[in-house]
Amino acid sequence: MAAETDPAAGHGGRELLRSLVRSQRRRLCAAVLLAVAAVACQLVPYLMAYLVAVELVTQASPDGGVLIRYAVIALVAIAAGTALMGGALAISHVCAYWLLHRLRQRIAERLAVLPLGEVTRRGSGRIGKLAMEDVERIEVFIAHMLPDAVAALTVVAATTVWLFVVDWRLALAAVAVVPLAMLAMRHATRGSGAWVAQWHGAGMAMNQTVTEFLQGIKAVKVFNRQTDTVARATDAVRRYVDAETRWGTAFLPGGAAYFTVMAANVVVVVPVGLWLYRDGAVDLPTLLLFLLLALGYTAPLTKLTGYGSQLRQVRFGTDEIAALLDTPALPDTGRRVPLGPASVELTDVEFGYHPDRRVLDGVRIHAEAGRVTAIVGPSGSGKTTVARLVSRFFDVSAGQVRVGGVDVRDMAVDQLMDTVAVVFQDPFLFHDTIRANLTLGRPDLDDEAVHQAARAARCHDFILALPQGYDTVVGERGATLSGGERQRISIARALLKDAPVVVLDEATASTDPENEVWIQEAVANLAAGRTLLVIAHRLTTVRDADRIVVMTDGRVAESGRHDELLRADGTYARLWADATTSARWSLGVSGERSGAHT
Ligand SMILES: Nc1ncnc2c1ncn2[C@@H]1O[C@H](COP(=O)(O)OP(=O)(O)OP(=O)(O)O)[C@@H](O)[C@H]1O
Image (cartoon, rainbow, N blue to C red; front, side, top):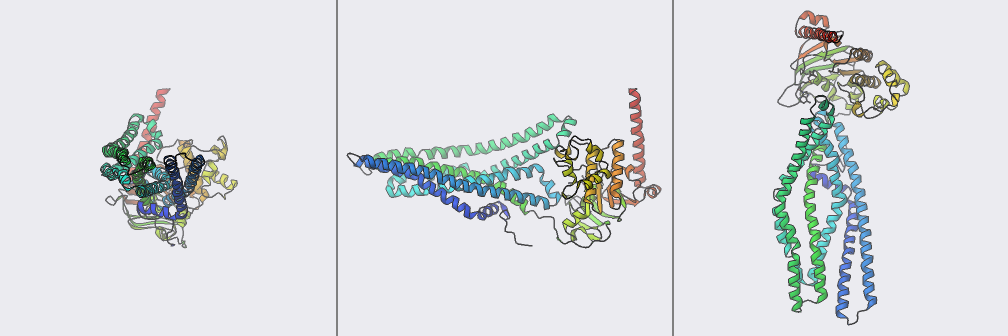
């Protein structure tokens, strides 16, 4: 594999920030040089003011032409300073936006290759904050803080040298407050790392809660949980505000002392200056120059200190981004290998989402090529987990998952994705047209192919009945369609993908009988000529499967055809009895209800 030279690659936030700056060093150097030149221009008016004062004090009749020349030079310098600073900021913004784009692209690329577990563990709210807010902070750092901070440092250094060259006693008076102010700032920022960490953590939690609230808004309304869900979101916001307030309160005494001491240099410079002037040790122009420069001297220093605290916030974000970018991708050999018949085999598979809790224990399943294999079992027995392992959302802790006779870890991830199509319980539809959702990743497909798949998946008719047919935009996450419609679209998508193996995680939510028939027909069409592994949450839908695997507590309890399993009178027979009883019970209940209405 080629060595990483990407600007967004690295280890740790500090290194990430460094590599970002390094990757744009030429442009950033140009921006910094322009900013320094701008600062030099900004100091010219002070020099002109000093020269005007010298002219006024030393000449009995000052030369008007000379004074006008000084004024014009000052004006030109101000204009040049503004233009140069504008140029510096323009260049630094170009760099920052380029890096912003690159960094977001890298985050997206990394998310695409991470094991799914890593993505869900972090949560979409946290990742959203990271990709938007934290990346935005880096933009502020590169586009504004960097040239500004270098310019401020240049002002401080140049002014200090100038003051000492002109008069060391007055210069000492001007800088006397700085060490004291620095002590106050040290006190103010003592332990600030912990405060920033709390503030950052509270920000992450707030984002996660608010994102969850928005994503789960349907459930919130249906279960009438507005009050406590809003309370939870409000609580997260309050905790964020609290963290910010605590941080501010901890900073306040030292910070206030810092700003007071910095502003107090006038109290030192003015008396010392007047005393030296009275003794004839300095002339009036020098005194005026000091009053001008020394009083403005502390502003850039204060700016620099503010940037220090902002930098700490940037670092927290970059630490998180770096941790995400450094998370190992799902191992991918990148090798496409010859596959045998499209069977799916799990051999002695062990797996747990957390190291201390095993969810699958010695699971052996053989789904023969071209056959329908159903996995059934009580809720939480590990059925969906099996589906996730086949499509490598996670890798097994022990044992093997083979597709077409090859361990899924030994073939390219692309090859596995081409070989296996997955129909999820709650299929995700993008906020896009139905056509775009159907041809996901295969824009080459023509209308005829799309319509044929939609017919086979029993969704062509309802799509045509929509206002713009195939060009109808479905709402966010497909919210404008029913669960059954979404699942049939997802089946059409799998048909268009034309993978030899299909893993179908059947929807748990009960759909109306008509919808259920259509889904069954769609699934039957999907199964034709393919290996179908159905994760069944309702037994009635799988009685015709070629093989039924019964799972309990993460193990395979038994397997066989429907009749064989009933004869064996084991777990399946019990589950079947329960399912048929509850079906009769629910018919009875609805019968009573309909009776009550008549
Ligand atoms: N992302 C996850 N992180 C942690 N634990 C999980 C995760 N997904 C599932 N589990 C746990 O793993 C176990 C098996 O879950 P799984 O979803 O595979 O069961 P299932 O048989 O498909 O259940 P159901 O029929 O209710 O969908 C359960 O105890 C569940 O709580």
